[in-house]
Image 1 (spheres, one colour):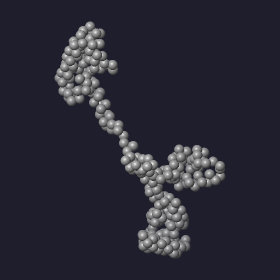
Image 2: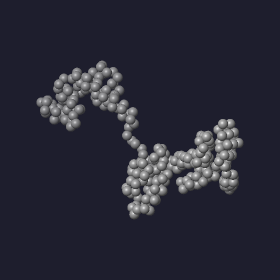
Image 3: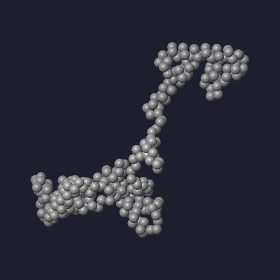
Image 4: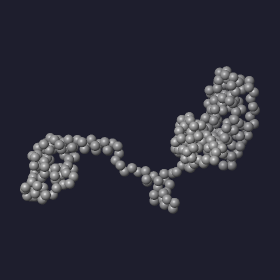
Length: 292
């Protein structure tokens, strides 16, 4: 670790000791790189602006990411700026490179600050990097605490919805929580947060399959019921299909027959129904047991 720290300090020292470039010298190096792909010119141009990368990376230290990683990402942005720079526009390279360095560092922060990706749009990105500053400034200028009014003012300033401000504020206020963290203050590892995410409902394809199969079986059953007489239909309906199923004795009393006769007619009707299903719809044998 000490060796790595020493290398980093040496890198910063070399970057800070690199000579500044005059405007014409800078333009000459940029032209040589763009027209002739002169790598020596590119190296001098990049080396002279590494102090700019370090300075910009230092502004984002409070996001909790390693400074070395921020500098590295800023260097990527600096290289991108060198690849896109047009010296004929008479703009200083540092002015042009600043945007690319900052953008590269910010993209790295957004990718690594949280396991939950955020700030995908330009407005969300501006909200992420300006929320704390705007909130602190508004709270100093007013007596209000963080709430709907503060969120509304920030939303107006950045151009996002108040709900987006409230959501981002909540995300910045606390760290990510592991789904494997135990539930409860006692640290009981027998129950984790992930245990409460399980959905015991059937999968969508299973639900659709059951619905289609159910409709098909009902169609088969309705067609097979046409082989039964009116009394057989009534007895099956009262005994098997009605919500409040009738007893053999009560149904026999209503029909003026004995309960034993009701049982015989019911069994005969079921046998006729099974035979009709087997003859008309052979494929129904495996799925109709629940019905008949």
